[in-house]
Image 1: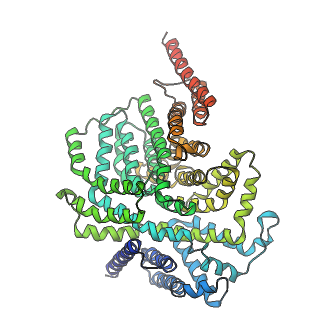
Image 2: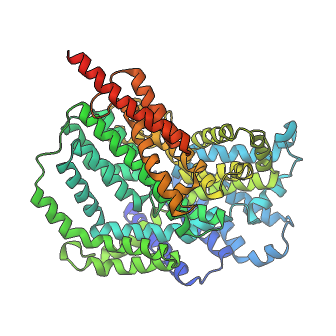
Image 3: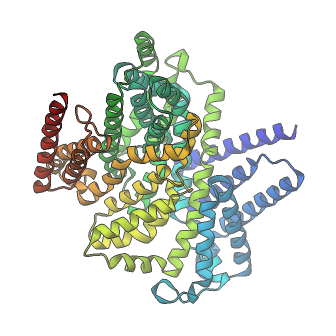
Length: 612
């Protein structure tokens, strides 16, 4: 009985929170310094209420955590004007409430996104309190406990700064929009498109995973959720078609992780990037399109080559008539998403575009009885959207602690100075940043990893001379792809569970498939035209060789170029040729094309000799 009551309470609470966020996004009724703590209170309460441990001691502890969350958030929400007037003035009330807020955030982040982020935040807190004992440029002058808590709790660069503001303004809105689009039947449309691919192409089962995950990831933006939704269908189909379980799981993990870089949602990263750069969300979305397409092209080619080498055909048992019937039945459900993208690109407010898309979805879905949304679907969309915000909301709040410590202590300037030593060899600075992103991304959401790394590394890379949006996209890419990079590859582990295979083997397959993802950031950081940061002429000159470079690189990795390439030297030559074409420049492009052509004819000659 208690469980049912709690479930109903959580549902009503989530619905009220979601509705409040929607109304505020549409009308802006609540000032930011009140909305941010209110958002954190909702996130914390929903996260703690989701605990399934019903022991009395645990229930009492959870009730206290929720109480602390509301008290600490209420204090700053009610007294924000007075706190703003007395900026920097430390009081006992601020220290008490701020300490509660920090403790609540660490607990909530631990429970929702894993211990890694909370441990990293705890280490940064220790650095703020004890960093004066560290010698050299990485140390600081020292701060009292009260000063640290006051800064994190009341300063715009702390807990209630840009990260939590982005979560409060954008995230709930987009999660609700994604829920509505999914409940209207768009997910079934995406799977119908994927099944069409599976029916009509070589190795179609794996290609359906690539296409389906790209489409579904464009609205979900969460790799693990993407794996669970699409992988439940595609992984068994791939295994049945002849793909090894590890390869099937690797394809699904890699394709699902790509959803983080696929507009429009991008796992909330696009919204935070827009805020940090001071540009429109539409500009970030446009910049992300070509790299995301290059990534999925590389994955599609890799799957095709793998299938060709092993003679894996299309999925013949699927019925063409049934597939076309589903496409016809659900095609209209793509209209809200298409409207949103077109609306943002043409310059309309992201808030207005999302609100209209949400409001229009039930009406568009009602055009066919099979896709009609019930009143329960409409209410559930708001409640579920709010619930799905909890993990990322907790992550942004915890990242706010880290960003606050970096701002207070000047750690970011120290790290920037360290990267500045490599100004003459910028590739080394980029490689160091890449490693930080991958390490930070182990076990924590990409958004949190991106926020932390962007705070400490982006200024130095921009100072070196790279374009700001290219730097931020570079950091976001590597933060995202830690999901498929062993030893902590959460998307790979999830897919391995569905495929019933070894997680490490899956991680290795996913890593091989996603290697182009590790090249794409270097491509656009040295050639910003691929992000739309140049003329269409520059883009038209760069794009064909970039695609050829990706093709050549995948040929070398997979060992296939029209036929199997067995000679390791030829495979190495194809990889080098791909790298040369990926590097922008006429000389390197011509060299890469020459190597690609030479490798093709050399492989043909070797095959003829072997047949004799």
